[in-house]
Length: 272
Ligand SMILES: NC(=O)c1ccc[n+]([C@@H]2O[C@H](COP(=O)([O-])OP(=O)(O)OC[C@H]3O[C@@H](n4cnc5c(N)ncnc54)[C@H](O)[C@@H]3O)[C@@H](O)[C@H]2O)c1
Image 1: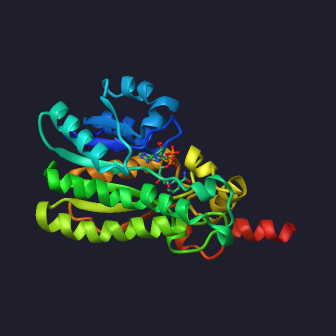
Image 2 (image 1 turned 30 degrees about the horizontal axis):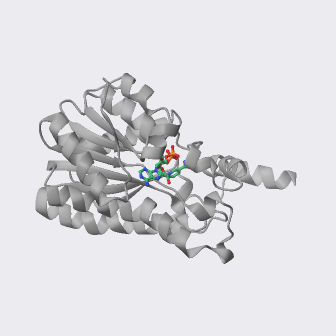
Image 3 (image 1 turned 120 degrees about the vertical axis):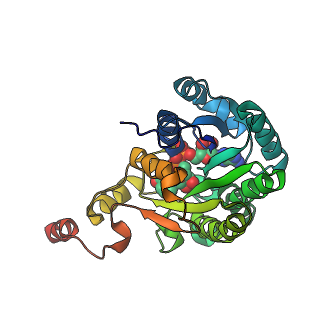
C-alpha cells in the first residue's frame, strides 16, 4: 500500500545490483511513494547486474554509471541528475559496500593493507565524497535527507566481518560529522541505518553467513529485518515525517542489538 510519502521528491539511489539488493527494494518503494529517481552504480556493476530491469519498473529512471570513489564520476552523475530533474535533489541513498579482504577470504591477522584502504574508500569515504561533491555543487534541496547503510559490526566484533567493521564505524562517524555540517548549511539530515544480516550479494560474501543469519533470527524478538522492511525504513527517513532525525545510527534489526539472550537460543543450546 502506498501513502504518497515522497510525492514530488527527487532522489538518487546508489547500489542496486540485482533484485536482492537493499537499494533495489528502496528504488521500487521510492517510486511507489511518488518519487522520481536516478539509479546509479559502478560501471562494472551496470554491466554485470540487472539494473535496467529496475529502471523499467521505476518509470524508466535514468541509469548513470559512477564509481562512488571518483569525484569526477560523482560530478558528472549530479550534473546529469539535476538536468534530468530540472532542479535539485531531495534524497540520496548510499547502499554501497565492498571489501577485497573479505571477498578474497584474507584473515584479519593477514590483511592486505592496499585492499583495506580500498574497502574504506568504497564503503565509507565514498559517503563523505558524495556529500562533499553535493555540497560544493549545491544540488541538495532544503530539508533533504541522505541515508547510508551500516551494520552492528561497527560496535561489536563479529568473526569474518574483518575490515568491513572499520569501514562501517567510519561510515557512521561520517554521518555524524557531515550531518552537523549539512544540517547547519541546508537543513539536510544525514543518518545511517544499521540493518539485520540480509541475503544479498554483499551480505552472502561474509563467511559463515547462513549460520549467522539463523543465530541473528533467533536472537531478535521480532526476527531479522528483511531488505523490503529496510526499504520501508529508508522511505520513512526520506519523507517529511522525519525532518528532525539527523546524525543518528538507527538500529533496524528486530531487537537484536538490545537482546542479551533469547528463549529460542537457550532451547538450541540445551539440545547440544
Ligand atoms: N546484506 C547484509 O547483510 C547487510 C547488512 C547490513 C548492512 N548492509 C549494507 O547494505 C549496503 C547494500 O548492500 P546489499 O546487502 O544490498 O548488497 P549488494 O551487493 O546488492 O549491494 C552493494 C552495492 O555496492 C556497489 N558498489 C561496490 N563498489 C562500488 C563503487 N566503487 N561505486 C559504486 N557502487 C559500488 C555494488 O555494485 C552493489 O550494487 C552495503 O553498505 C552493505 O554493507 C548489508
